[in-house]
Length: 455
Image (cartoon, rainbow, N blue to C red; front, side):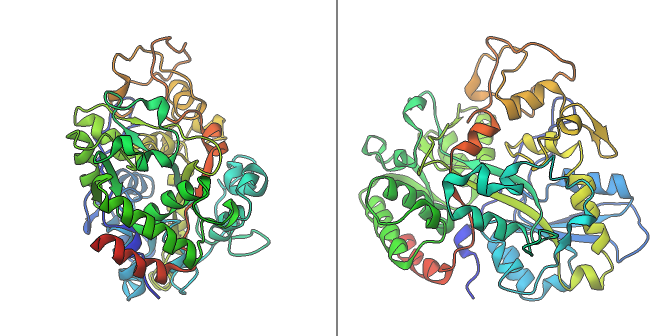
């Protein structure tokens, strides 16, 4: 089978930690290895975990070692490299992997490369306190039609929902980043903005097929340029793939794009330098553009076909590595105690990412556990409920959640405070247009994508 060359080589970087310890360290680069420094008992040490830098940040490694006393070695690699390494033999020497839903199927479904996780092994996976986006997508996002089945197919190994195929730890609702000095943000709410002639030559366009093609498909379906329906859109036919690639080639050749990007840093540089005024950049990139001194807003997408491109990242044990190295239980601990605890939601929100257990306000907002302190009222309400910061913010386009001093006490939102881009989480869920998966026609998609990259 072909691997996820579609998903590109860039990694999500990040700034330094700040505030009440809820910020975090940087994201790391490609194909690097770092490890903790303390000992442990059972199983081979150090534990070994591979994945993209946005999924396996140093803070997560350090928290695991702090909680367990077990050193963990983290190897960062982009999604295609993660797939290639694990499917060519490295899974025998690693215990856990992370990836996102656009590439997970190559490991969890198409090959016998991962182990399922019994729900009973994760005592913090309480379905009363997990967002319905995972526990009941058929009702919560029913407007996606058959796409809701693909969410369940990524998540569960069995119809009885007793074994998790790919337990989630982060997710996001990807949109368009724009420069509010140069673009009217109220006019950017659909993927069609990327192809609007008024922005000709000023668009930073991703060049990763499993991301860029869906954006084109949403635009084309909404404008009656292709036949299809929302329910089937995340697993496109060869005809739909042909139409999308041909359309993107025409847009590229007529000069719509200032540049295409694959590496994360390139997307940041294009926006930070103001060579591009908008682009399909990731939310951490939007924040890094701000950290470079250029204002950047992450768009609020419209409801319907052109809504957010939703994906989730997860963690799972590797087969045979976790078993042979006697670390299956420790991988469960990594998922349950570190990522479903009180500390992680605040840490990862510094890059704009949400967590499955945000409905557990008693823990995530107001509580603490062995992993540390929860987010506190101001940070949680800003991140998940769309409320403004307690302090006034003079330049919203430069606001950095990692540098802001979040109050751990109840307070009043300021009339001049900053609200989170894209709005409350439930509104974002209401506006999903596409759930990212590894498509059935991936081989054909990758072959056609060569035509776009060479155009």
